[in-house]
Image 1 (tube, each protein chain N blue to C red):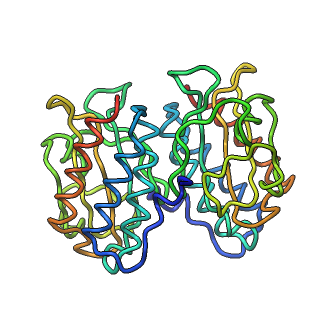
Image 2 (tube, chains in turn cyan, red; image 1 turned 90 degrees about the vertical axis):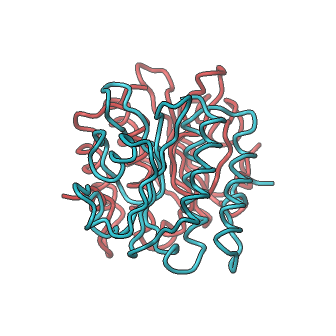
Length: 175
Length: 175
């Protein structure tokens, strides 16, 4: 199979089916490959292309990617691989939705980013967001960050699937 | 300025103007930030969004990103940040268009990938490709790789601008 096909999603799939394909393809891509940059780059493609193949609001996803621990500064995240428009390079722990997920080590499911205290507007078009921490041995190593240009772009179904993906990444990649 | 605006390209710009914006925005984004993952992630967004804002054939660009030296195996490239569909994780020096650029340290401008000996078909939809080496002190550290779903997607104008971008990346990022 040529690799591009892994991120081609048939029209008419349910969100459950799209996440199942993302998880299955990620598992295959990580097999024998533990380089985190490589694995997160391919995963950002799977997430972006998968979610945008779905009906509204998921087709309005405008950013899907990762921040990782900044090796040069403690309590700071730095931009990793992503799909979407240019993004903030660094985010301090505790700042905005990403920073809250990093500090609390808990998923942040934000229906309206304008209502989130200290929200960082990297892209004024983003209206809702989900951020899922990736933990190795209880320590934060990265976060999954997805933005949507619609309000309430994400639900508990996204949260469950992305938390499973975060566990797979943590088990499969060396940071 | 919110960061996303750096990768918003006005309609009707010439290719020269788009590359000027890419170079200018990359320079700003790299200012004070030498992390290669962060810098290449944002640059892949600039390239993908910039080229796709242009008329045919540039609007058929279907992959824009980077491969870097694989830290675990000599004479091998490994996938870095990109925009597009899921891609091959590793490429040996000398294999396909990327491998040829890595071995020769010369830009490969390929009008028809089917005519290139040993072409790796990560995506069967790609018809033309340009690969530009990124060198630090004469040593290869990474390559810029861009694919197009049209034949003859790239010209000497792309080559000149991408070689300038490769020099900027080499001067601004620690690999």
